Length: 254
Image (cartoon, rainbow, N blue to C red; front, side, top):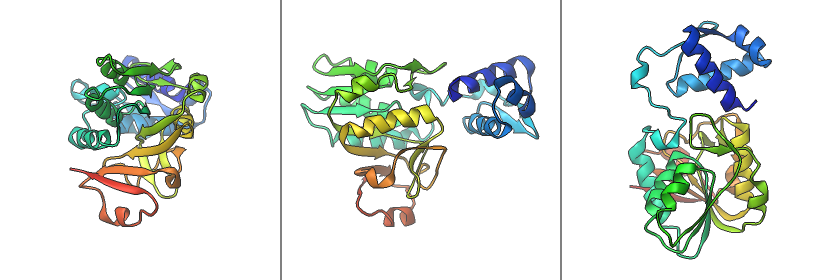
C-alpha cells in the first residue's frame, strides 16, 4: 500500500470513529508505530487532523480546511509560488522539451507557459497537463502511474519507460524541503523516486522553493543539492541560507 493511500484510509477511519490510536492503526496496516506517527504528523501539517497523546482527533473546524495535497487547491504561500512560477517561465524558450513535477509551484509555472508556443511538456500533474493542453501549439505528455486518491497527482514509477525515451532540456521541481545535506526531499518515497527519474532525463534541474522550504528536510531525497543547477526562491528567503549556496545559480522572484 502506498503511504498516501494509507493516509487516506486513516482520514476515513477518523471521520467514522472520531478518534484513531497509533497502536490500533499499526495493527490494522501492519506497519510500525513510528511509521504511523509520521503519517499523523504529515496529516496534521496539512491541517487534516489534530494529534493527541497516542493518536489523533478531527480538526476543530474541518469546514475551513483545504486539501493541501491537491496542488490545484493549495493556497499555502500562493503569492510566492505564483511569482516563482513566473520567474521560472523566463528560463523556457520555444522548441524546448521540459519536465514538470506535480507540485503546486510547478502548476503556477504551467499557467504561465500557456502563453508559450512549440513546447513539449512532460508531467505527472493532471491539472498542469490540462492547463498546458489549452494551447494547441504545445505537445503535452502525461506520465502514467497510480492516481493518488483525492488528488490530481500521478505517482509511482510506472511511467519510467516513457521517461527513458525523453531527453528534456529542463526539469522543474519543488519539494517539501530543501537542505544542503539531504537536497530536495519529500514525504513520499514513490514521489521521490519518480523525481529522480525525471532529473536523470533532463540536462538541467531547476528547483522551485519558496522561503518556507529552505533549510527543511523530509523523508526521501529526490535531487541532491549539488545536482540542482538553478534554485528559484522568493525575497523572504533566509539570507544566511542563500550565502552558503555555491555552484548553483540563484534566482530571486519578486
